[in-house]
Length: 158
Picture (tube, rainbow, N blue to C red):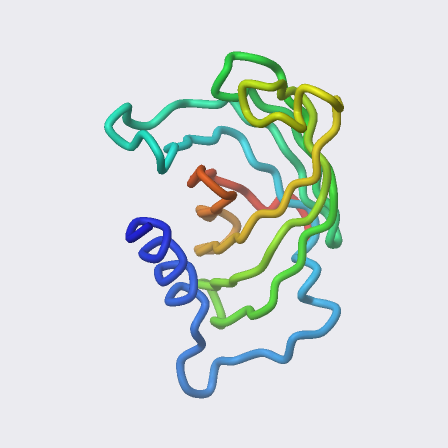
């Protein structure tokens, strides 16, 4: 539980605006053009001792929508899609940071994850996300229930 709280605090700290650099949350909260994510590393908070796993993510975020595919912790191909919103965005010039969420659907899981996953091929998914970018490249941290993730990204177009 302490690790979950620490992750949430780090995400909030990343997006907390410094005096004079807060931006209004408006249509820009839906993201900045096309973002390409390649690679994802996860840590299961219930078994931190097992270390970090590579999940081979390839994903796109565009104007508040996201979609991607990755290899889940059970070794199965998973697909996710939905909306993403940034609640706060701060920074100016080269360095920006933000905190938001993703809400969507994910496939590729079965009863090993939870009972519901054994009954339906599609599950609802909610992630808390935070990012820091320098120029066109950045790093995203995310939290979903029992899993913390880290994914590098690149802004392909504005």
